[in-house]
Image (cartoon, rainbow, N blue to C red; front, side):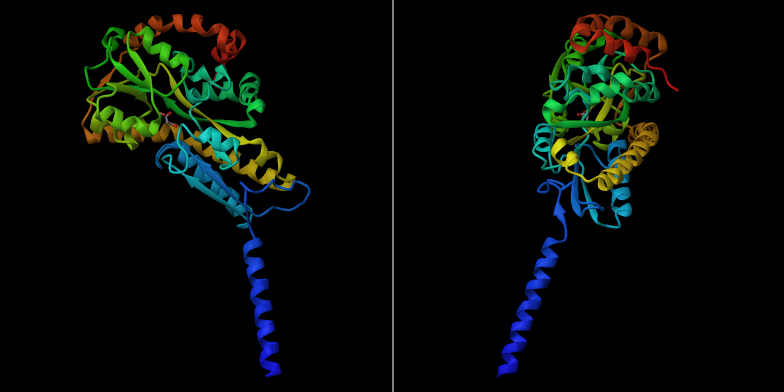
Length: 349
Ligand code: LMR
């Protein structure tokens, strides 16, 4: 009897030790203050949230970043990537980043202009003629200052990720001249500059979250929208649009990779160094894939064949460029003449 009782006590003890070990092994980064006093890679789970589909530069970059961090932490850090607004959408992601419910988000910069109007830069008409020019600005001194300007929001801008130039789609008529946009309702991502760009062309801009775009087009809430080939193709927007004008490119979709101060400043040096290397790796992937994924997207749009494609000639494009020039004067003060100058002068290396 005595030995049965002793055996039972040992068994209960073993169960308790096992349970404590299993539960205490890994910390969710949202509940962790990071504990930057301890050395070594800290066990944690990191969440990355974004709103677009899987076959896009943003998702591929996020996956590359996640895999790098998991592998090089010997599995101590788990990284969960949530695409398609599954975790947080355009309306909720910044708030949840600030609250550290998510550790990284990668919004379109035109959705961040409330935090700093300089994030309107990719919406200025024809500001960059290539991804490389955009990198030159965002990796340069002024671009870095803009990315780092979010301390009052408790957010840290880490890196610019590209998507590319916006093409324009609609259901009413092929867009060949600025006049063709007259009276059309166009969904825009965000920001005063993009809205004004369409007002200058006689269209009515309407800001809507990405997750509501397909339905808004389907139901005729808006006549058209502007986006990259990869977003148009992966969300099958051609199923609810009749015309696409390419070589328009008056504005771009560019992203800012953001984290929050609570998470980032709580990391110990070794963990931060590893995550930073993961960010660099993800950035490289996103940047090297953006052009290719957009070309693949365009190919798929043509193969699907449900939108009539019109390619603007360089002369036709120039007419848009001249018509949209006043947008620069209107926003010079708000964005900052020095910021616009640095962006205009950024040249590809
Ligand atoms: C959109 O809202 O149309 C895009 O900016 C979405 C994205 O993140 O690429």
